[in-house]
Image 1: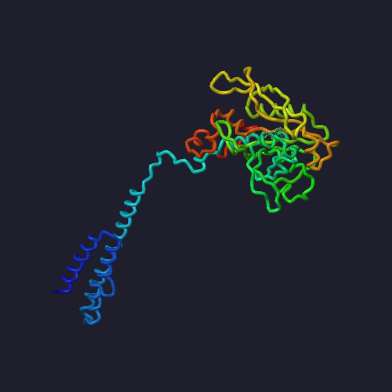
Image 2 (image 1 turned 45 degrees about the vertical axis):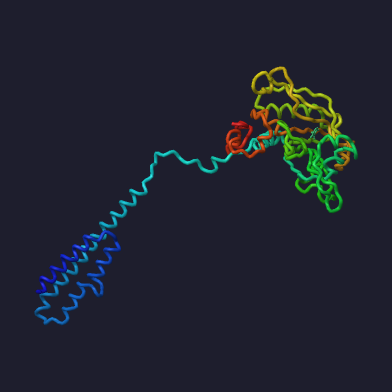
Length: 376
Ligand code: DAH
């Protein structure tokens, strides 16, 4: 076969192979078979060495021309394969930008109404100049009862349906706190000589203005009682604190909380060992419709307990009752939340039912503020 026809045969075979290569890998195999060390075109080039100079003059450009043509065809095919691959990928990865957005995880979660209510309450009292304090859920019998002027064996201890805990290593009697009132004493106590006195809340010198939200526990369960519930305690101590201020603070708080222009309160005499005098407070409301409306109507709803701090409690806390006096109040947070947000059964609060929290829960990052509106 003449060199010329050998070249033409190779050209047509290799061109066909290039055209038939439909992946980059297949194309590379064709390139190796033609132009690689042992490739067919390279083999032809190698014959140049043994030719006599006259023949080589004509054969050289012809074979090199084949080599260049093959390289050019391979490059062109490679470019078209690459753009076809890109085309296919773009088609496969198309995104419909008109689809609705998936909600982000932060937008899906909900704040529990109790947390929301606590945030609302602390926002209101912070605005009135109160600070926020906390105390331990597992409380000593001393702080829960004795320091609050419940004498040993006093029937009020039984009225609290207390959960008793194992005593501490030193025999100290412990309970799940039945109210947030023990934190009053922890806040007032001037000395830290008792190891558990004030480890969550530093003691404060009068004047004291503090609110204390937290979990409380009593052995009781029905539609409006759960064994764990929440209270917020208020405490104001100064040299001249009086019931008029107590009344103003409560009225301002309830107006802000229920987001109504006016509330009417009724103070009834009552008994708590840690206050003297003690009062229970009813708020005027309308119960004629499906939901209770605060600030109108001619019904009354009991809403909190309060009073002037008993001198014995001040003494237990290391304050001189002949110098200082003050007032305190205790409110059920769950009750307030039920009233404000129309939730009829307290037990549902703690059932961890996702449908309930989706319905009654609040959007995260919507923190209640007085200027922004508490609940919206
Ligand atoms: N600790 C009381 C309770 O749980 C509520 C209470 C009443 C708290 C009067 C007070 C108060 O601070 O002054 O029943």
